[in-house]
Image (cartoon, rainbow, N blue to C red; front, top):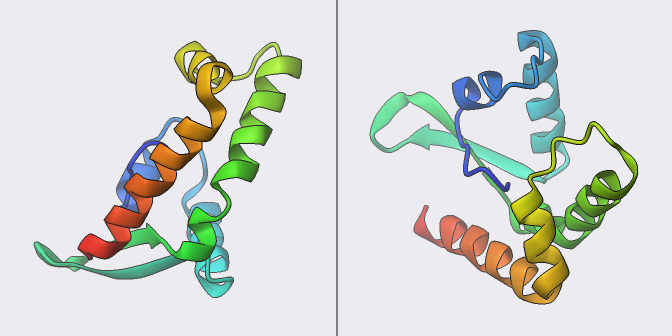
Length: 109
C-alpha cells in the first residue's frame, strides 16, 4: 500500500523475512476478502499483479493510525521518521494523497 509493490517477488524481498507459504496464504486471504485483486501483468502475461481494491484503499486511515501507534510505543518500530513527521504535519492531507494515488492506480488498470 505504501511502498508501491505489486508482485509476489517484490513482497517476498521486502525485508520482513516472510516464508513463501505464509506470503502466498496471506495474499489469498486478502484476495478472498476483497482487499486486493490479482490479474495478469499487461507487460508480462505470466506474471501476476496484485492491486488494492477500493475496500483495501479504505483501510488507509486505519493503517496510518496503527503506524503512528507503533512509532509511539514500539522503540524497535521500522516506521520511517519522515513518515511520522508528515503525519504530524498534515494527517488528513497525507491520507488524501495516499488514497488518491491508490485510486489512480486502480483507474489505470
